[in-house]
Length: 100
Image: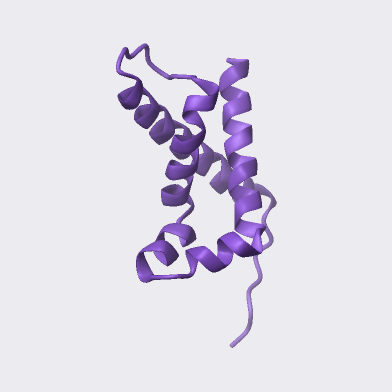
């Protein structure tokens, strides 16, 4: 369980830092596909979690095929991190309503 939480936190930290790092921002602004991928937290998060999955070797289900295990773990973790982010933003986010 601790391994999964470290995996979850490390991926979220990597997502946050990669969004703030100027060379990655410049690279991801090349082309429509990369721009859309980078702007979607769920899509970009999947690839980040998939990239770091072999380093942590955690899995949500006991699956023997490593590639399938990494893909399913990345899917589940990205969705969970996305839900946590939505909840965090809903609870602590600032909503600005402008009068038009």
